[in-house]
Length: 250
View 1: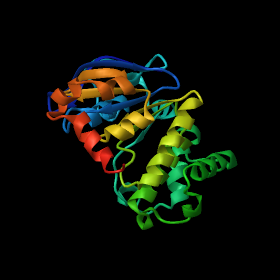
View 2: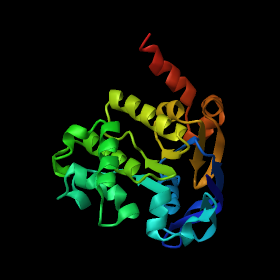
View 3: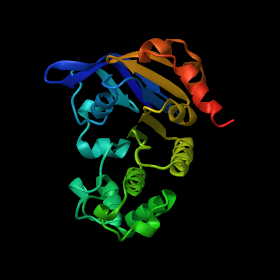
């Protein structure tokens, strides 16, 4: 599905991501985590064609991402990024926002079938009752779910997520995990950036831990959570911290 080999990218001539390699299989969910500033979001931006990678290769189903036109890439990949209410969608209703996900398939001539797909994605994300509301009227959590519906409406092969649980309460976080697992089980793939290691472990099949633009750990979620190397990467005893917090629930 996704094959990344020795990719390097960044800003202003400075590499933030450095010769990074990994693969994601069809149906697999990969969580990407690591300390602040390690290059997680920069990596997603490069894989979505927002910024260029100046060396290496990144392919979705054998197609080099850097050579794809925007509409072609939009049919293969969708991005759910960190966002706040308003912005570029300030004058849009929820339905109009989700219908933007159909643009790569139908252009400005959306059909009845396109609208049915959008409505199904609204139902899937629990936002159907909001479809006539303006984006600016939504809470942060509602907006995040609407943007996930837009990503689903693109019908991509892979979804890239940048802190998708932002603004979501615990119940909605659990629902998000189930939605993404169900979506990936239908022959799709997910790559998600997370700071919350518990959330990353619960959602993903594998976890990639980045540090200073490189891969420090890449293994099953269980093995990464058990790795002593996490302490070196984050600079404190993560497993002991997790144990102490869980004791409060006993």
